[in-house]
Image (cartoon, rainbow, N blue to C red):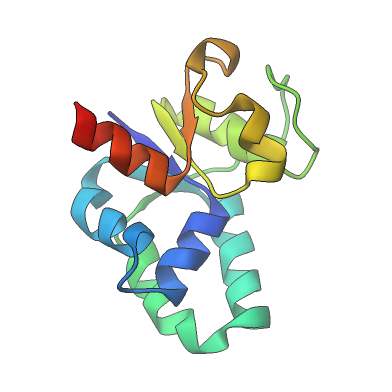
Length: 134
């Protein structure tokens, strides 16, 4: 299992250090990866919206492997341009899961790895629930 973490999950984990996203990162960071692109997006959003969470973000991001962002290439699922580098980096990294809170753009592809290049796209909550069932 290899989990790719989207920017909004990083943001949530930094802002809510007692929440599910932070707990998941603390527990499973050894099998997690994110991209430079996602980390930069999360950092920008933290600085703009919740600068008091920057120290927590830096602590979290140090636990997760960062891979180079995949800025180009054919995206096998339909996504807005801004989300394609996230999905392509998840593919390139060999992730089995992409954890995101972006229901608007990733929602149609969630919980259906046959339609998403073999990657299981889930929210943090869906991932935790699926792990508790298995």
